[in-house]
Image 1 (tube, rainbow, N blue to C red):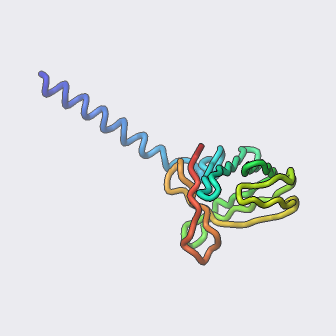
Image 2: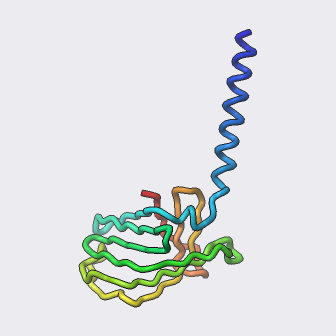
Length: 139
């Protein structure tokens, strides 16, 4: 009887885990992107946070600098499997960022590629011709 109960428990656990694993891949790229992402500069010791809203709003906080704007993410992937994203900065508070820079980034548009190895990790590629990327983690 014990072996039968153990068999039932193991079977239920296996099917439960399989369902959760299958649901991980059902999110769209935009659903995965929405939320707060961060990365750390080693020199100086500083955290940068990127916030992507469901309403296409974007906010970046880097030391004292706060920039806000809008973003668009294509669901169509490049040949290499990466997703194009564009961020248009609309406002900049003109404070120092993690790199020690003070600049007005208002009106700047930037394009880059991202991929999501899992729901809690984003790779931000510097350009389409490189394998170098920045790793951001869900906050």
